[in-house]
Image 1 (spheres, rainbow, N blue to C red):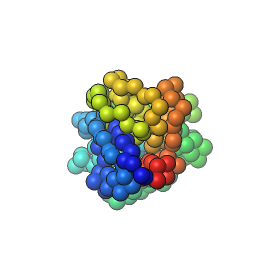
Image 2 (tube, one colour):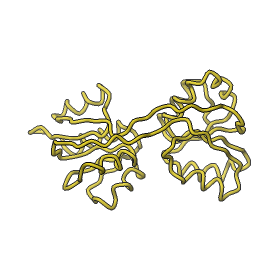
Image 3 (tube, one colour):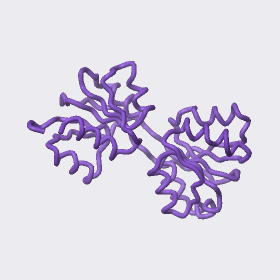
Image 4 (cartoon, one colour):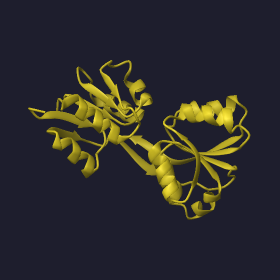
Length: 221
């Protein structure tokens, strides 16, 4: 990159991720457009298998002293990072996918005889629970974390914006607009939240921050 490229990240990145971008001459502007907080919950009325669709849910459940009892159960999850976090903490992951829609398909086609407890957040999409309902699969849901929007006005005029969730998109658009900027998205659901605003979207091959950063480097190097 000959001249510094100003890029906005809608979440504060780790020092390692920042370093990777700055190595290629990126001038990074960053702010947290959403806030994630653990929510009080009770680990009761649990079904035979567990579903996690984010690392946030795993972190929240692990904060409960009774979480040790869950490690005997089969687990189904969304995201490679979620899978790794679960396995590092002694959970038995039977299947994982990149997206909730794919996990819903696997569960309904192959594991439809099991019953499930879904650990979710307050802004979760309907994809997975609707698929379970439609296929008559027994499940219950426990909300274990809360996402709140933190809209803020950005004075900078970046050449590109990094988005990591549909709620991050929603929060950003409350006080800002998107003009000609390239929007780098962590996944399809995040890109979908932008689809009526812009067509200038690049979606990561895998839904990880590392893949988003790879796309940025590939675009501007």
